[in-house]
Image (cartoon, rainbow, N blue to C red; front, side, top):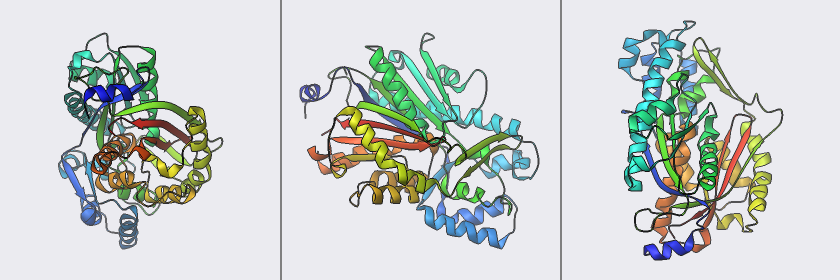
Length: 384
């Protein structure tokens, strides 16, 4: 397909994804070896908790993940594996540096794929639930990339798993209200902020050990792509955010002297199942695009296999409709706000492999986070 054909397909006033990038720390974790390594590195011996983690690791469907935590870090900061020791200062020292490094790497990858210089970036949206500092990570990222001092910056802190799609929504609004702008969205997360040794009084901690991973993602967004120098990937047609009243305790995170204390209520998958169809119907209604759900592509943040399974059942989706989300979960775990970038990359791979299926030109980008907050974008693939 030539660039002239692409120009006929997009709406010049709509925000369009023009590049995607990702980056990871060097430490690769194989799920099959996680349990023994975790109990060894934290110097704990609890056969019951160990068996519980074994079962959780099998149910998450995660195969590999990348993490910042390493034996070298624990050797330097042994207090991170101790109970009742104030460690928030040490954690933030590690996290602040790590998320900046990963965000810079992901952004550079994205900018290279985009094909234009970093000096053309006019706005920056930075998303993270893994750091806390003044100035924020947005400034350190801008400095690391050599962005212009007049680059306009926005930070989204502690949005959790919905942060990536929230960032897309904000970047979309910026791009559409500032003609000619080019917005860099960067997300970066590490689990060190909440890393803890196993404890029988906190069995819910093991869910995070079995499920979550680290990394960064980046997206370039703008309107009216330049023919020949930019490649349109997804048109972001319309967006929607909703929170469910009285559900703020279902995804609960507290910043304490020992880092973030984080827990997911068992009711989370059921609550998402009960509300996802109404949300999707509303999102489709806002756009006035009427289409069977099985004729859409799906880019869903994979909070966990239970959420994906319940969505699939509730919406009567055909097998394979959530394959990009399942593959991202298997390869990277739940990497919080970053994961939607990895899912979108897998959606692109599927589109290319099929050779362009016009039936799946439209799709939904979804994520669920603290609140409980639903984030959604109706998108159109431009790589058909």
